[in-house]
Image (cartoon, rainbow, N blue to C red; front, side, top):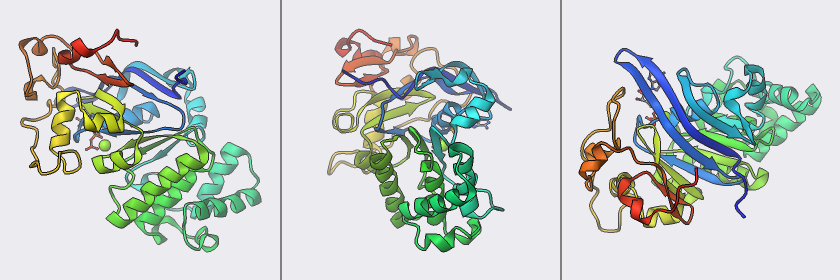
Length: 328
Ligand SMILES: Nc1ncnc2c1ncn2[C@@H]1O[C@H](COP(=O)(O)OP(=O)(O)OP(=O)(O)O)[C@@H](O)[C@H]1O
Ligand SMILES: [Mg+2]
């Protein structure tokens, strides 16, 4: 039997007010994450990946206007701000693109990790210091005993991201959300940080939501992948199956347009056209204007996320013949 998802997002909608009007960055998003798995989220710039992550954590500057975010059976959107604060950095940890988002520049790194441990785990100052050193060693920060006395600016970018990961895993979270955790780092360090995320999952059996532009990283690291377009998940499934046999025309285009996804020997083919402008409201399928398989009905009828079997789902009218009864 399939286990219960640790995170179950349904119909999530998040809006921003901008000069051009209301921008719906997340537009009816459904996503499940099961215990201990790594789920990759991919999609073009502006497709709403970060807005989704921040909405799950209730840290978005936008307004969550609809939906549910069930985490271990509770809807996070119903919690008080105090309850939410206890959950962040405890049961749910976050790693962002720029490690300085999570670090206090005026505090020594040992104290920052220690503070989280004292707050969430009730450790004494002395216990917390000892645990901070162990954590920094576990993320392979060289010379950890000495480094705990450093301020963030005394570390390299890669070292700072290790500190953030150490803080993230300090309370053995059930879910780690990482938004482009290696984009700001150089290539050799990227691989080390990704290995660390993978190690973390093995050690603490935390589920990981990994947002990345890099399909190679997804292929290497993720059990499942969710493809986002215009604020929605348009396809999701086990990574190997999805890469071998993409079902949504957008996924097909995305794979053809990146070196990792295309078949050997094929040229790279960018997806023609542009993603919808922020604020555009589509009546039918939001990908229809760019779709190479588009039919007349696609412009009027919004597709549901169809269950295709084998844990695969796609939001495309053309897949209706192969779909099973949808189970929400
Ligand atoms: N604070 C904000 N105010 C207004 N609009 C915003 C804000 N944050 C995001 N948006 C809009 O929401 C949409 C989704 O943005 P988001 O940052 O989630 O994209 P993304 O998929 O993470 O892109 P990238 O791959 O470039 O990080 C975009 O149209 C963006 O302009
Ligand atoms: Mg982003």
